[in-house]
Image (cartoon, rainbow, N blue to C red; front, top):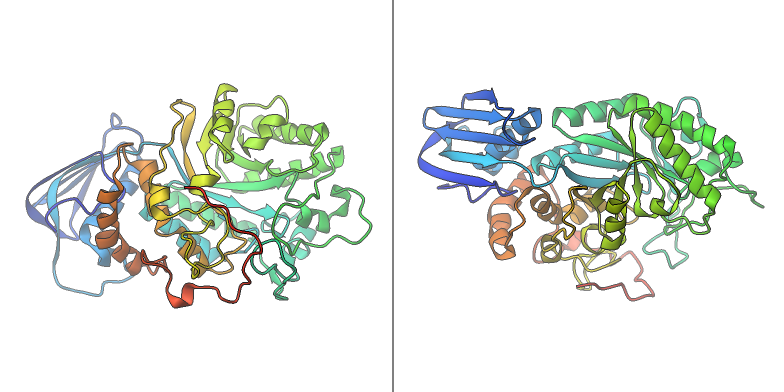
Length: 469
C-alpha cells in the first residue's frame, strides 16, 4: 500500500507522506471543536498516529478509516496473521457532506433477529452511515413489544404465510412467519448503535400499513365482515386505521413507550400509501405529529403527509419525486432525499434472467452511484437508502440487495459532490470488496449473482418490471 487510494468513502483531502507506521499503533486522541461536525484529522508518522476530532462521531469515523488503511484483514473478527503490518504515513482531513446518512431496514415484512440487526449496525458504521431507520410495523407484522398492549406480540407479530414473489399472484409459501423485539432488545440495539455513532430511528406506521395492529385490536379499524388476519400479501392494503379518539389515545400510549426506548430526536410515524384516506385520517397524522412535538421530539413522515394539514416542523422523507422535496422545504420542514427511482435497494440490479425476483426500477451499481442530489437547499439534511423486505426473507438476501450498492450510497452521502464512477469502480473492486469478504457479507458480485443467489423457485411476474435509466 503506497497511498490513500483505498479509502471509501472518499476523504476531503489526503496527503501521502514517505514512510509507514506499524499497525496496530498507539493513537493519541485530541479534540478540536473548530473541525466540522463528525470531522477528523489523522496525522500518521513512523512514530505514531494523532487523531484529532470534532466530537465522538469524528473519532468513530477516524478509526474506521484506520481499519481501511490497515487492509481487509482488519475487518475480520479475529487476527489470522501474526506478521507485522503497516499503514502508510500522511495526513487525512475528512468530514461528511450530509449530516443525515441513512439506511432504512424493513423488519416488519420479514423479521430480522436482534443479532442480525446488530450486525447490520456494524456494516453501517464501516461505511460511515449514521442513521438506522427501523421500519417496525406494517400490514404483515408488528415488531415492537408494548407491555400495555400484549396482543401486539401475541397476535400482530406473526402471520400464517407469505406471498411468493411479486404481488400479482395467488402463491403462498405456507410457512408461519413472525418475531418481535422486547423492550430490552431494542434498548440494546440503541445502545450498540450509539457506541458506533449511529442513531436508531423507529417508525410506527399510521394510518395505513396497519392491518397487523387492527388484527390484534379490531376496534382500531373499520367494520369488517370477517375476522381480521395479519396480511399474507405484499403491496398496498386499503385497510386504514379508524381516525377516532380511541385510536389517537391508543397510539399516544404506543408512542409513549417508543419514546422511553429511543432517544432519537426524530420519530417516524409513516403516513405513506393511504388509499381512500379522508381529512379525518390526515388529522390523525397531524395530531400524532403534534403529540410528538409536545414531548420534545420531531416526527418523520413520508412525503404524502404534506397533504394531511397544518403540520408542526417535521423531517420529510421525499421518496416520490423531487417536487415533493421542494414542497417540503418550502413548507419549512427538513428533508431527507429517499427517491424510489434511485435509492430503493430492494429493486432489481440487472435485466439478466438470473437476477433474483426482478421487481421495481432497474438500479444498477452505476445508476445508484450516479445519483446527484439536485435540491440545493439548507433544509435538505441528507440522503437515505431503503431496504424494503418483501423479497428479503433471510439476512443473505439483505446482503445481496444492499451491497455493493450501499457502498455507492455511502460515497454519495459523505464525499464531495464531484465523483467519477470510473475512479470509484477499481477502488471498490480491488480494495473494498475484499473488506466485505472479510466481514462475511454475501454481496452481489459485479459480474452477476452466484448460482445460489438466484431464485428459480419464485414464479416470474406476469407484468414487465418497470425500467428507469
